[in-house]
Length: 77
Image (cartoon, rainbow, N blue to C red):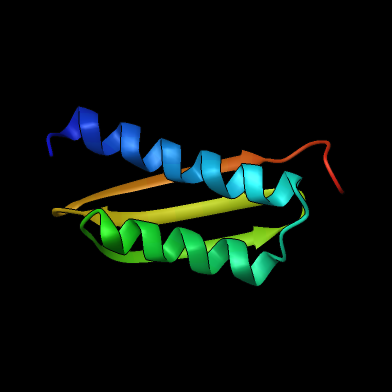
């Protein structure tokens, strides 16, 4: 994957975490799912922190570090 594709995949993984939180998923399940998806797409390491209203993810893809943070509004919160 090139950098543009990696950024798109990483953003989509965070989108899925946000959808899970809005749908009422438990925090540990959101963290575990994001961690597993990052590994499945070639991420070497990942750090995921989620609370019902916020998700922070940092991951190393092919030697480049990416980090995203997203506030989650609405849903079951």
